Image (cartoon, rainbow, N blue to C red; front, side, top):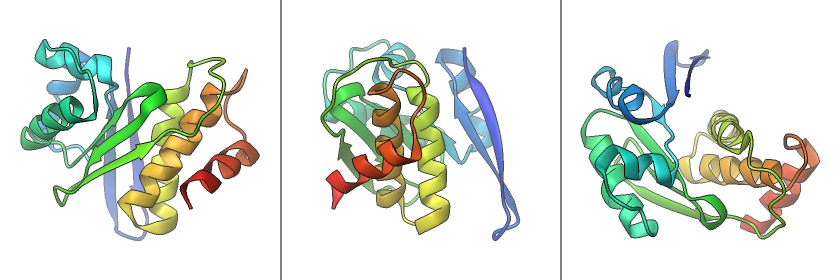
Length: 159
């Protein structure tokens, strides 16, 4: 399962292609230089037939995906947080706020949505990743999807 999202960036007059897919679906689009791809640690491991054990492993293989064409790579590491390699080749890592894991359904989508909202608000990859992790964690710690209030509460952990 996966999805493609196309987000018009009004201020830049470009189309941003975001890919959250698995295995070949993900790797087949790299030649088109998508703006953002977001595998989780398990999906990243499947692509390269390795086990992603920690942030360092994620960095090694996220870097390879970036070298293959992705402009920005965000890897969700579950309760550990997320790692990003941005279009300028900078590495970012955000630890997930603590909380009770209730339901992980929709957390990846929440991360992508939070990241995009954060980037549009701040035009800063670090802040965008914080927003993505805050949104994903808010969804994971809820029965349903994240609420604005829960995301804002999680963002306080990054200040």
